[in-house]
Length: 114
Image 1 (cartoon, rainbow, N blue to C red):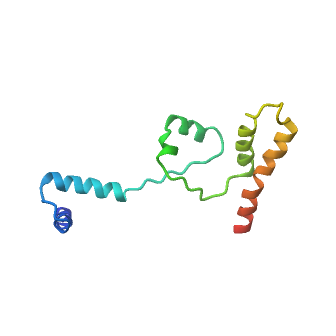
Image 2 (image 1 turned 90 degrees about the vertical axis):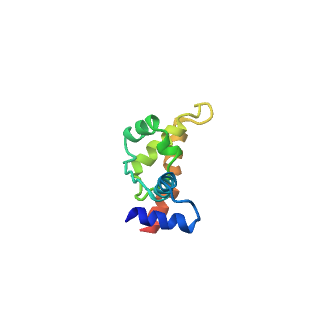
Image 3 (image 1 turned 120 degrees about the vertical axis):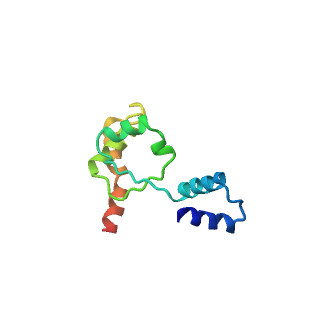
C-alpha cells in the first residue's frame, strides 16, 4: 500500500521507480514531515546544562515559548547578563534595578494578553 503511494508520487514527478529512488523519496518526505516536540522548564540549571551538552537544541531548532516564564526566572536570566558588566560601569544597585526593569515589557505583554 505504502509502496504504491510512493510509486504514484514518483511517477507524477517522472522519476524512475526503483528501490533507490523509492528509498530516497521516503527519506525526503520523512524529513519534510517529521517533527519532534521537546518541553523543558526554564527554571534552574538543567536547561542550561542540556543546552551546553547538546548545542543543536538551540542552533538547529525552532524555540516556541508557549507559557510565560516565572518572574524569578526572568530576573535570574537578566542578572546573569548584567553581572558581566564591570562594577565601574554599573553599580550593584543599578544592576538590580535594571534587572527588574528589563522584565517589565514581557510581564506587561503577558498581562495584556490574558
